[in-house]
Image 1 (cartoon, one colour):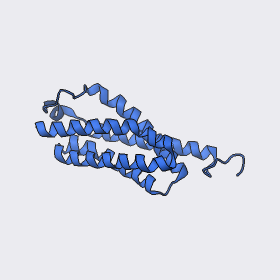
Image 2 (tube, helix red, strand yellow):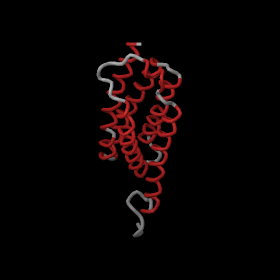
Image 3 (cartoon, one colour):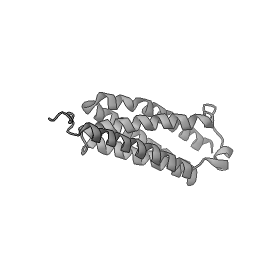
Image 4 (cartoon, one colour):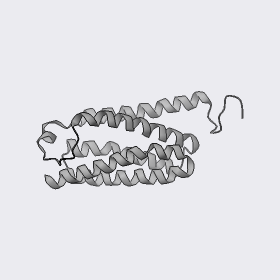
Length: 162
């Protein structure tokens, strides 16, 4: 191993390039999809449970979670770029990015509930798989798992109430 190389085989420079790519991809796509599927008047008119947080909470929570998701994906990518764990990471991103358009654009509360249940399963699967490769990557998903569990309950409650 040369001085510029790390145990993963990627040079320090490429590790940082990959980190930047993960951050841009995850935060950028999240922001793009969020801008394309704004809650709007339809969502405002829905009945919501008493545990529904104020709208201003969602953006900072999701930004923070997207940073953690990107770091976890990057760490696994450096150790096992072609692996079941990386496939779980990619799958949960697709499910994550699918939920907002299904809920806010298609206004399909029950299909959105199925998507978020799939998302939660993929998150838990990633945590289990990542814990064998990189415990920190697994722990980075813990707040995400908690938030998506809460969001699943919220989605289910809104679907039942409407």
